[in-house]
Length: 216
Image (cartoon, rainbow, N blue to C red):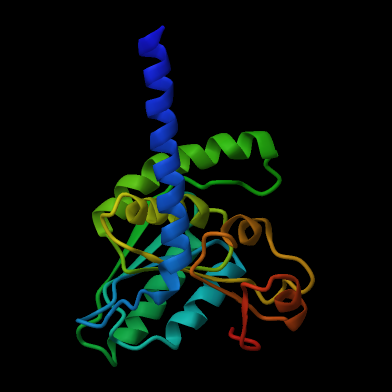
């Protein structure tokens, strides 16, 4: 009985430390400035359809200092890979040291997939996201809404919680979200270091968000 009580207290203490560490990482994230001593490795989450188009427009505004660029797409996404390769090919014309890679993980949620099965598929995607993020160790995760970014951001957050490396999570809500956040946005809003919206109505509802007008 004493052993069981001790185990319960130990688990509770570990959970408390985990929560405290999570709170610290989330609250102090925006004060972290990557790239002060060199290039900024960025993990870019691309999604099918308009998500990839929007994220590549954001990438056009980034300097050559954001390298290497690791693009992550769903394993069933073929169109995004073509767009990324085309974008990087044009970028290499002006930047001879351009470095990028394309990685794939299982899709977190298919269109019209039920919420209950989405939890299982997201956990499955997390199983592949953890070793990927721990291997790449990016300075920044840049995403704009595809469900694939949820397990990747969780993995990036875990890097900081474990004290291995602080990873900035930058989320840009899609221009089509005017009154409410997307499901992905609602999930990542509490843990993002920088959360950008493109409509003032969303900025009024979500005080942590940053409104700079239309970004993409």
